[in-house]
Length: 500
Image 1 (cartoon, rainbow, N blue to C red):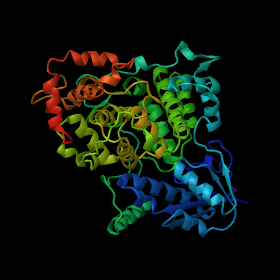
Image 2 (cartoon, one colour; image 1 turned 60 degrees about the vertical axis):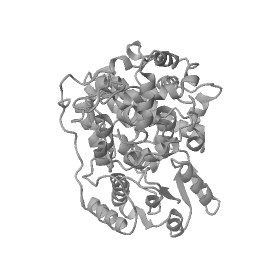
Image 3 (cartoon, helix red, strand yellow; image 1 turned 90 degrees about the vertical axis):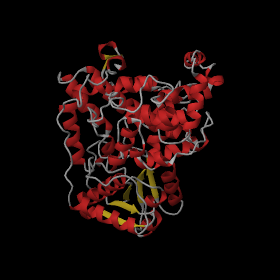
Image 4 (cartoon, rainbow, N blue to C red; image 1 turned 60 degrees about the horizontal axis):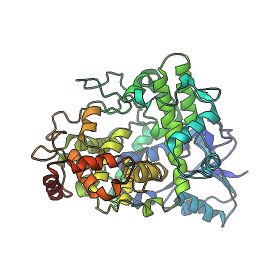
């Protein structure tokens, strides 16, 4: 019998046996390779390194004598220690697939189709064939039809495909939190203690990490993942939809599921989470807007960016820079020096990344991504920064999300317009502007909001190209009406790459 080689993001039972979430048939021997070289290639967030190692070691402990757990410098060194035929589910990066292909030329390795998503790569290829544009909403509707999720025949339940218009509420006025119960937090054990000791030793030996080494906040076992799913559905899903785009300084989880880490580690199949959410809606426990919002994020968006990673090819990140953004990441941004920043939105976002390697999608897109877009940071550097610092990030996660969505570096292959915005959006959807040194409605002067001023400087920089863009022509017309345009440009030129 072939031994199943699994990677560190293939840790759920559906990566053994058949493809069902409970598909572990208990028969196969399993190979897990802990490669220290992975952590030398880039400067990972300490919390991310902890999560990956803890998840792998917990899985090995669960599998017991069935698992060969090999801790070595490289994957090739580990594979050399395990003779015999192997099988492996196609991994989630171009680099890992190249490795598997190379090993397959040297020994007997059966490569199985990718798992851990609602749709297959063949499904996406069929859908994408002949389309001039690939739009997430079109893909999402096709998947809803093919799976029957939240459908009545060929039509969506309640006659609506999405509830975006209902799911854009700002946080309650004056609220410091949403007032929800604390999420269920994992309890660290001896395996976590061992991980901490090893990371300390690696650092002494020269491996460099970034970020805080606080308590583990995310699930790394299947049991923990299922507990987090149940806690989310019970306590936060009802308010997830309305407040999914809102943010509060004092409530970093808000109503979010905290499932991206275990789902991207392969501990939880996305269809499990979707089915549990739909079941709660079917019972009348949660509003349709919240259930649909979650389904769209998981079955629509997560699957979509996974497929775009393969569809756009291995050179997508390195070759995409339509806006000619070449500014290197400044040290204060790259090194998570939140205390150097006066702009409260940026300071809060960087502090959250520093403290836990996570913040939710709107802070990633409309604060950190928006700032990087405005300032013309190099797309390759920004993608690398997100990939290394976020605990739920992998190359497939960040390629389209950063290059296509946040930075519009692919010229519109993914998104129909740049997601640039001024301070008014952040003021409306967060409490970040409260007690800030700047004012969101000031473009110039001592209290000029760097996000607002940066927005207009960005529009100016690309005025000629955006004047012909169907969704950006209006901002260009607004730019021509600014009475303080020259003053603003001088101000932002002087700001340069300094911390705002």
